[in-house]
Image 1 (cartoon, each protein chain N blue to C red):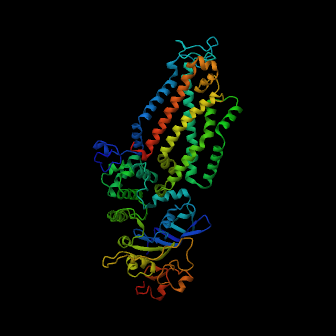
Image 2 (cartoon, each protein chain N blue to C red; image 1 turned 120 degrees about the vertical axis):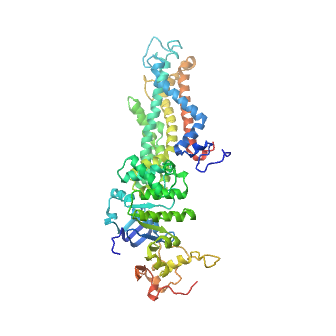
Image 3 (cartoon, rainbow over the protein chains, first blue to last red; image 1 turned 30 degrees about the horizontal axis):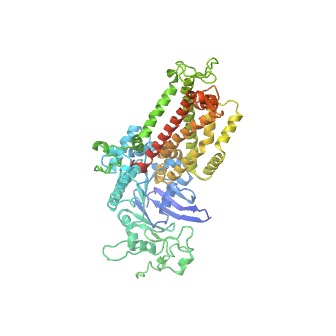
Length: 333
Length: 307
């Protein structure tokens, strides 16, 4: 792409230094870019490092975690070199974040209006009344009925979907260049999920934002994302344009995720799973991190971790199988 | 509480007229409503108000000077001029009772405010930042808790020749801050893990803002409750220290040093009007403040809402 990326992450490493001298490599050598106006999905199981990646971008990693290495460039500015005070200006203004739990992400003792205007007044010079008007307008934009009344209500008076809309309103209030949504629909009803995702897509178009969508739901990915990055064990194992990646899956892990989705055409008693769990982040295997669970594991995989290589147009994969022509077609179970 | 059809927007368990139900109430307003339903606490508020009015407006109720000694009028029985008689120095007991209330309330309230200030600041820092800072503050608190308060206070009072009210308040605050600091730290430790903190940081709120704007309203329940209960105990401490002669010295009138005159058996037997009123004043003031504290605790505890 010729355009300048909004966000450019290079070789990001975020490690957690645990008490017993173990080092949990939650994010280990992750590089990717997000271009203006696109939606990028970051997919993976629990514990694969998706959320830590997002928090690293915001620099909200708490002790004992630390960003060890790498660069995060946002619109030409290097975020990791910034002083904490400069960073508070970036947060909210340039990058905003929507969290998984709308139930707890709002402060229970302040009104909705109070929390939106706080954000507006923090980053923009405006009077109380201007901020209030803008907040009402934002609430209307995110599809909240009776916006004037809701302004004076407290988080506990709203439903989960409404709260998530409020979170989105807060996030977009300063028209950030990048919106990070960390599993924004996981805690919501299935019926509300699509509405919230549609809303975020609308907001992305309306405010020309880029959207970094963190999810474990490949259904959501196929519907909303332009590009997908699959994370496993703190690394990106496969990356590519959504259609291409879903059609010609090159990594056994991605394939496992796809197979575990329910299929309307096939009747099964039990859904397929990927056997085992993500290895602990302080105890990765020596070779490929997926080798402990991979059905196609080869000797080579146990020896060394494969490099990420291009297998198609903008399609990258971290697996040795592509050298032998991709994942074998037989359903090995 | 279970009888009326509940409106979906209402989280208030109370029965409300329909249009009022849609009005939103802050958690603070909800607590206020619960408080007002506690009769004992509401009565106590009035009792405290009466005591405050009596002592603040003491000159209106008596024209006697509480510090004026008159050696020709020692230990007189109640008369028209001296409603509660006079003490061993010929000072008017009624005036001393009223003016003594000022000292008790000032000491209680100021020491509470001072302790609150120390407790909130140190507790916030310790609870929010954790780590080494937390360790330093909490170990300092442990050391203070380790020293027996009374012995420490007595030693300091004994060293200083003249104990003034501000000095007395400072000593109390500096020796009793650890308990409040611990409570606030504990509250903050749990608040810190809530996601709205991450949310606030994600929109660019500074640490200072999170601690003082987002946390204090969330921790207001335990803070207010403990502050009230602390005030009651400070009034007792003042009286107790004055009683044994280590508090605010004569001629400043306090309830404690009024009672200390009753250490003399003659006064105890012959002049009940000299020591019963200040004793009773201490009793009802402390009782009322404790009832208010209990009322506030119930009001701020969401689990006690069925009361």
